[in-house]
Amino acid sequence: MSEVMNKDLRRKIVDMVIAGNDGHIPSAFSILDIITYIYADVLKFDAANPDDPKRDYFVLSKGHGCLALYVNLHRHGVITDEDIALFCKKDGILGEHPDRTKVPGAEASTGSLGHGLSFSTGIALGHKVKGMDNKIYVLIGDGESHEGTVWEAAHIATNHRLKNLCVIVDWNQSGMQLLPEDNLPGKWEAFGWHTLVIDGHDEQQIAAAFETVAHKQTDRPSVIVAKTVKGKGVAMIEGHGRWHHRIPNEQEYTEIMGALA
Amino acid sequence: MNVNKSIRQQFADTFLDVGQKDKDLVVVVGDISHGVLQPFAKACPGRYFNIGILEPTTVSLGAGMASVGLYPVLHTIAPFLIERAFEQIKLDFCYHNLHGNLVTVGSAFDYSNLGCTHHCYGDFALLKTLPNMEITYPGSAVEFDTLFRQCYRNTKLSYYRVPGTPHGVEFKASDIELGKGIKVTDGADITLVATGPHLKTALGVRDRLSATGLSTEIIYIHTIRPLDVDLVHASVDKTRKVVVIEEHMRSGGLGDEVLRETRDISDVKYASASIPDQFITGYGEYHELCESVGLTVDGVMALIQDQVI
Image: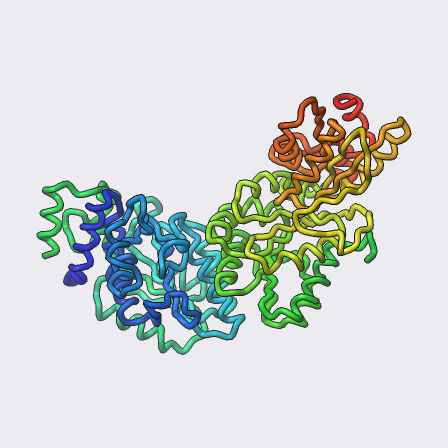
């Protein structure tokens, strides 16, 4: 069992959910460690100029995990304390899914699953047309991978050799509750992608995977299939069930914060 | 320009000309019009993609390209590009406020013998629900060429519904402006609002009505959204009789729009020459399906005699 990382950000997420009286805590905890690593160590971006054409892109296709994105945009100064305070408030810019038209640093308005990878494939192909080598990272869910559009885009990316495109799959077994036979790494390999499988809560494995992607000797797109735990970090909320979209009560809040101390 | 020139050939010619001057124009097709677009593919290497048979992702991909400053043309058969990929149009283009160009063939029942899977008569109704859309129906080559050049780089998502049969009426490029209808004939007794190939039908009806002593005003509409409300309203206000002729389902088409925009005018007699709100299950030539739903001179005359005069 890997040690729980990013406890400070996990606490911030819980506080945002309490203040906003809404949000998906377990989904955010599932992807938090990967997104945090990407923003800290992988992505080239200018917090003061999030639309910089030279930037690398991060697209959160699994939009309901957006709290993990928001706390990282906040940590790096792309969005403000006030933005965080107004999560799910009438005058705020942060809702339960990221909105490209409102949130600096949100590259796509996602929430309806199965859009983000196809949109990102267009970003990657567009940069190829323009002769630019920006990197495009897109995080999708394993349940989202039921959507046919994921595989439409995967097919295009392979055939157009979109080597600057990297997918991270949040393989927390949500999808397998419904369709248990699901060899995700095998599928991506069959689609011709450079495929890595890691523990998505182990910093060394996360770092090694992105290092491998950065120095790969192939013109194929890459996928990091990350084994994750929904609700990672707090035993009470881990797994699939009632915590998917639940707001902690006072007693539960105390217990969660105790686990994240 | 030859009034009977294939509009599909025209869009290939237009893309070739525009694409050689504008390095940001990208053409993405779903294995349709591949042959006619080869001159563009050769003249604009790296900007032509016969992307595959995957329309929802084609639309999302086009939106992604637009987000990095390219001007995409996405092209395939209407039911697949508009109806199958509707949510991608709605969210990835329209909600994101991204520009782009959807060019279809095979609208209504142009592909008559291919059956209902290849028909698309509800596209205006669907797309009118979306903010940031422009909807055009260029019925001749010059209309496509002119409207595309006016629209392809603007901030909207522009839809060009290309019919298989041009209406055969000659317009000059200077006659064509997005959002502006064209008064083809002046008249005082009845207004015919026609769109697409059925401008030709309207002219035939006008000739028949003239023989009975009625003068007909024909308003031709190549832009469904934004609609030239002023032109339509002024004509209906004058004649108080209006028939809308369109290759679209009765619900949600141009006729509904005309009714809504003229609702303040009293004592208007209205009729809709359109496709009934049902699947068109028969086969045969395109003109035979037009006959089956009354989209002919005889059919519109019968409708007028029954409901308008």
